[in-house]
Amino acid sequence: MSIYWHTWRRKEYWTFTIITGCVLHGLLALAFIGNDYTQMFLVLVVAALALFGIIPALSVTVRRLRDAGFGTAPLWVTLCVTLLHRISPEDSSMYFVLGMADLIMSIIMIILLVQKSTKPGYTSS
Image (cartoon, rainbow, N blue to C red; front, side, top):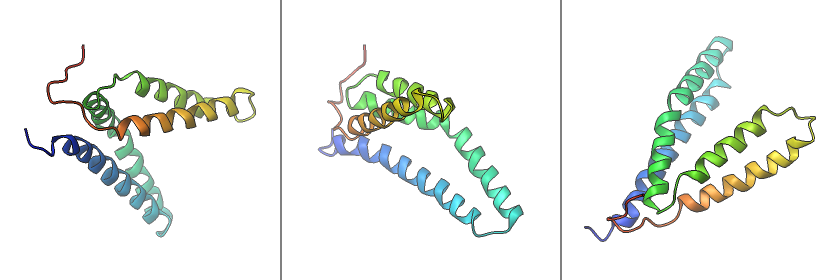
């Protein structure tokens, strides 16, 4: 194995994540420049890309967590908390609590995703 094995896995994940995020945000920025039809078209394109990009994004995130030696439970908890926060009404008493939990879980996920990869022989059991 190469000496750069540990950084290659992180580089692979973050390259995919940053490029995908820049493309989606760039298209949204372009949507604000054009006329109504261009805006509507670009917003639909971004929505379609985001919708069809959910599976690959989850896949590379699961791979990155496993490469770092973690299970996938933090990802699924983060997704559930985020979805609950997004669907809860803003005037409900749980909206603030779910927002704080969403923020905390997002920070935990970032911390887990930036960890160095484990040895090449790691297998999840």
